[in-house]
Amino acid sequence: QVQLVESGGGLVQAGGSLRLSCAASGRISSITRMDWYRQAPGKQRELVAVKGSGDITNYAESVKGRFTCSRDNAKNLVYLQMNSLRPEDTAVYYCYTYLLTTDGVWRGYWGQGTQVTVSS
Image (tube, rainbow, N blue to C red; front, side, top):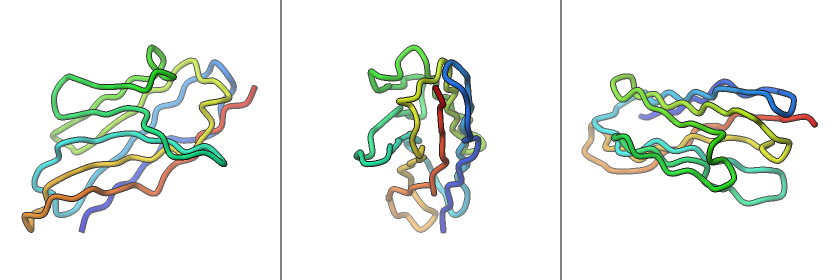
């Protein structure tokens, strides 16, 4: 019914930049939030950025000042601009959204993830 598709991951050297994208499609009535999470090998999934429909974005302390999350509400897109990347940013990055479907159901959805690898 609803699909989340991430793109933009890859291999980059430390200090470099990447831009991730996440597109939500399907039977969507309204989206409240589109967030980014990441999971490094052997670690729990952690929140990177929380983005509501307004101007406020909350970031994990480890990425503040380096990552910027933005949304295109009209197109159901969310982006994560990642600058000054560090090897410890290496992880699979996931998009998450909580939305109202056209069936009138509120629920969360995860994307399939995109790998980001930062070499030292």
